[in-house]
Length: 269
Length: 339
Image (cartoon, rainbow over all chains, first blue to last red):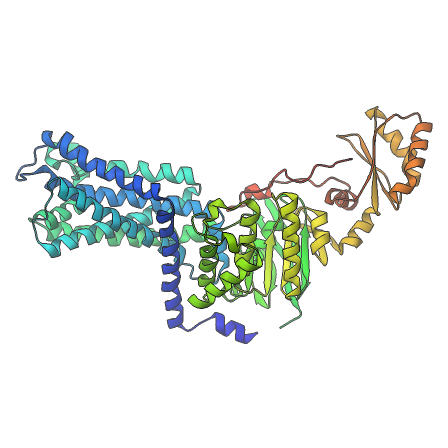
């Protein structure tokens, strides 16, 4: 009997290896979904593309941004942040689906790392976000967007967007595990991101908004992250919003990772 | 290691005011098949969830393969397999990918996980469908794949929670064959079922569960003996005279007749049903009772329940109360038939 126990309780290093390996295996499993259900990826990319086109050609002409020659240069930072946030709302939906279909029960009865289901889900959604972000950059470039601040800041902008999306994935995970069923997760996942995304500097300058709203908008982490992204894509003040944005990301993770993990434990138990 | 693969002592679990498991003692020797028989909501699934570490008990102890389900949960998961009430397989993966996924999460390594996936596909006759996504599988195929997934880790103790609920008879029979083969491998198996016939075919030892308690234990033969062999079911045209009918035939039974209020059916345990049919007709005729239905049938779980508890197996709300479970197959219990 002791031999079984020894084998099943590995050394810390082996345990770390399995934790990473399990997360990778679950990530891969989640990504298969996008290959096997092409419409899923198609429609989650069409929407942001439509936003790029709508804002560039429909609203763009009416929006005056002081100091910016082409609106699309201003727009793209906002579009990228919007894209990762909308994408991350799917984290909760995916988890609710796994819960309701018994997959979570199966996973929990296996000798795998407990963290792997949540880590794998948020990671696979980050990979999906990377794909959509790259596509957005291509579409943006086609309608006139250019990175003006150099290659390294451009890569940093993409990395920042993904990190921000990862943080929101954990909020979404917490929501999905709290409401438990797929439809509710879908609905609950969206309502709270709309005001965050649109009452921000993502699409229009903050100065154009009424004073009472400006206070909220300036404190909104979406505004802060979009401003940092603008610094990284257009040039201009970057350090301050970048540090603030990173602080928000770390803060969100510090709060919502434990909350989501706790929900996961209880949701299945 | 001790001889018992599963031992529980005074196991308890409540969900709010509902005592889902209310002091259950079980013991299953290694290499045997134990059946938990009971209606929806009797507490069967909760017992399985505790024994597979998905749920912590409120009280009592449980050991599986020598491991305590709470203290040694992590080590225990390496030596058990579970096929829950759903076919917990990923629709968007192929059959092979599903098995491979589970193998990797049992930490078998890439090559071994692949090998076992192929082995299971072969064993469950899914080789032809191995590279199709599960979305295209029939219900029976999903169940077989799910069972395969629960065996990928070569578990010492296997848990099957209502493995055939919702399947058509043909799929059910073929799944029974598969499950019987497992037993030859020396795997200890605990299965839950609502069907006496299923327990009869598969289990060495049956525990009848009702209201979170074990109300009877033994082989299915022993349980059937409590019913008394066959069952004679009589219905008379005039329902108000059901009691008279019961009285008229009482003498012929091996036990006391039961009258089901809602249907007016009189059921009587008898040793040899066919032999006394003529006499039953004569007696009812003599009492001037017109027969609307008369049949001899094998006892079902409902009959065992009736004999053990004096009431028909009732569904309680336990499944609905328990987080993480949506009852499947509710109401699929075969209706009492007098055909």
